[in-house]
Image (cartoon, rainbow, N blue to C red; front, side, top):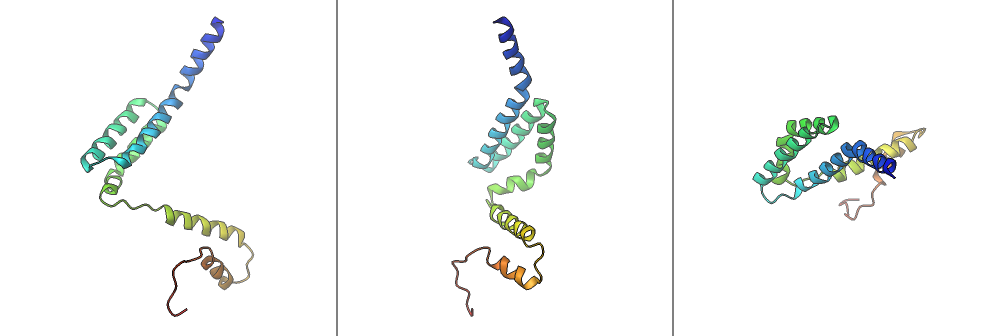
Amino acid sequence: MDAARRGGGEALRFNEPLSVAYYLKEELRLLWSQPSFEQMTRFLHNWCAQAMESGIAQMMSLAKTLRGHATGILNYFHHPISTGKLEGINNKIACLKRAAYGYRDHEFFTLKLYSLHKSSLCLSGV
């Protein structure tokens, strides 16, 4: 039984960096819901400090990247704009390009691009 307990303790010690990284990742999600710009700034600064103190190379690298882009990240508070839809469209276009290998003309490909989304908007003159 002691060997099993030692093995369990060793497994916990071995997986500690993974659990720390997971908790840091989950905590970072709270950045976007901070009630004021000052609190958002303080939260980002504190999170980066925690990531640096973790000693986990990947988290330290992420903290450096976030610090380098802090101005743009914090601007989200004043202008909460997401590029999610744009990236989704770009992904659909990339998938269509892979599937379209061998189309004989660009016109057909262009028509396929237009048909990616059914628009609820009525285009005037069409």
